[in-house]
Image 1 (tube, rainbow, N blue to C red):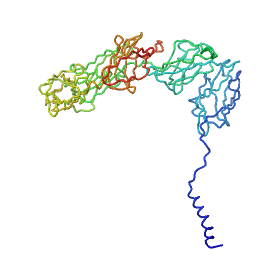
Image 2 (tube, rainbow, N blue to C red):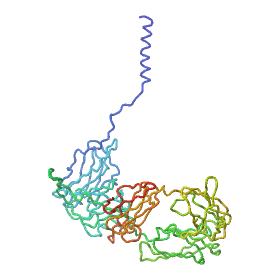
Image 3 (cartoon, one colour):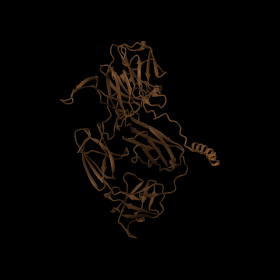
Length: 559
């Protein structure tokens, strides 16, 4: 063999080894990822068995399974006093129970929801139900529907739906449910295998896990009607055979929490020697009176926020005192026949230093429909208009504008600049030294404020004609579920002005008792929450546009 031929024989294997070593190494896969949930292959006794008297049930699947959060997800309807024991066995689950505690002639269903999943990929088997009857036949009727929040009309979660065949009003307060299920993530529910009978239906946000409406704060929905489930034939048209459908299949339950929390003072504090405040636990919409012992001249502000009272003390002895007594009497907004009286004792202030500066503040952007406010950090005692100047900027010069200063009737901490103010213009307001004096004798320092005004053409107006019969409506406009404007329909008309361009949700509250707020229901009094309606779609407000629509909130028809 020639020398070069021998070299080739030696080099070729080496090159092949190098190529194999440099090749990308990829792990061997087991094929496509398994995304299928387990499938039940058989059960002993069979699913849907009658004359059930067994101590054990075995449900076998086509693959190995596991149980996820079984205690939270398994629903046995009707409930069994002694909970069965459920364990994994082979490719299935074994249920051990005492047949002696089962009711005669009763259909039981074990709703596993999504508790059963395959052992490898955790693919859940959704809404799996195993059922049997202790009688001659298995009940096949059902209830289905949805549970919504009574105010927002959005689906609720983690809520039970309960059937009682005891039609007394106290059944939901003390008795075990006849049938029970839980809503899914969309608020929908199905109660299968229901016996033909009369039932009352409830939804319950059960805070103590006993399936009873028995402690404050629990949510409830109820319908006064008595339901008798059944089946009926539905004829679609002449060319189609009638089909059998079960009813009721569209029950709507509106969940609410009762407002039975009595009004009380939630907090009170004294941040500075001369300033104290306190707040109620909810909006104080009814009448109330407040007085400071020893200081009849104290200034109180309570209309800025209907649950908070701000008090500026004036008597020097009270300000210097380490104890301030405030008396407050008010009508409870929930229990309207109750007059409550509190004595609040404000002790040593958080800071012993009193304010020594009197500040003025002005909104630099004035909206066309709002006054030009001068806001102060203390209540105002007096002001001298000759020490203030208001000017319009024109090119590079400022032109004096006639104006007057007036006190704001709503807040003692605001003044209003009254003048003919042009839109889309720039102004400056000059406050000279000692223009204003607060109730403590402090005076402001000179400062110049720049102001730009907005145009009314940047806003839109909306008029809603409320058609149909019904009580007065409170109409609210919402952006990102936040109320941005509210009015009460007068003579069937709701008017909104100076709305910023956007798409708004429109909500109507049927104010049945005329107290200008939404009221929850009361189960003991059999009061449903006041009806709330939403316009079917968001309504877009355009700038420089007067919008007019007609809406029947009850039928949800718009024109």
